[in-house]
Image (tube, rainbow, N blue to C red; front, side):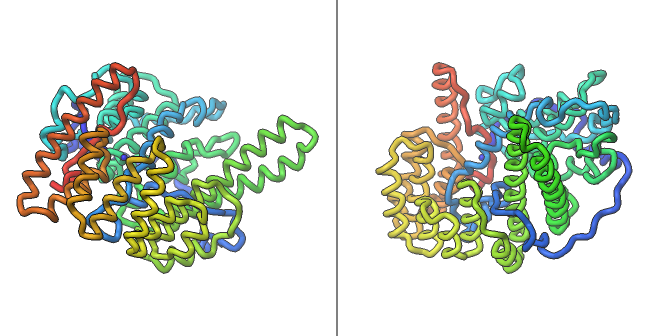
Length: 463
């Protein structure tokens, strides 16, 4: 998901950034065996929104769809209340104040925001809450506010609040195209297997699961070692398996207590989903390492078990990324979206257009309507029908008020393919987007609903 408001100042500056030492003692790492010992693994399928970046598709010039994952991601950010992700416990006497040091957090500058979108009239009010900033798509401003909240002198934050703010800071940096900064700031967490991050009484990990997932990937980027991410996911898989094994034994001991049994079964479902999610993240990490063969073998070795439709569709997208169209169909045989994307992957663009038209005609009120229209326009590009594609894209912007990443990126591609004066057209496009955003904001205020999709950077316009 988009990029915009320049943040308010955050001190100290990036130039004064220093890395803090790891917190607590380091536990010896456990050896990793094979591909997660997958023949014995309960991993079913997977979810991998973060590693399937639209900007890394095989064409290099067109993005197939708006990044829907970022919308769900921002929703997930706002669902992480400290009380839920970090319940109170007698073992919470540990000191995490090292994460409150201002030098850990970089200042964000608006240099990568197109000039038309730096207009102060487009910026959120400084009094806007962190939750509202995230829900409205102001991820840059949310990242700044999270860091400011963490570094207020003399305040008292409990560990749950600290980890919640760190998670939101890192996630928002990732969502506003500042992954490189997030990859540096995540180093402050040090070794996530440190005993300092374990509850003394229960042995449970104190860092929320969502933060651990994000930190594993960012630390792999920050330390320049993709294998680190894979090994980090392996360690999470081991933990998930242990939790599942323990929960299944516990549910057998509580067969006569209905309420307790149902609560344990919900926990089992949660950990089974997490295993499925980890499976796709491992495959995605292998793809990022350009180990397509390893990713293919890994996906083939995952047991075929029932899973959620979402996880199955994510696995299908991974197979499409690897060029395995037949396996993608097997993962989601009834998913018309996967069928349309499969036709595009097989260069059957006329068939793809028919699929997109069918989706558009049969579901005119779908929240994914803009996604389907712009994907159909991408198919038109590959057929050389640039004028029709341009009309589709500009209609989505001017008539429907959409400004998502893939739309501006693909429209900029059409300009590049159509004229030698594409830069002027792309700058004008940024100005048009600014006007659309301002108009959308005014309408949203009247309707008392949040506006989503503000964040824009130069790369969205290929500038």
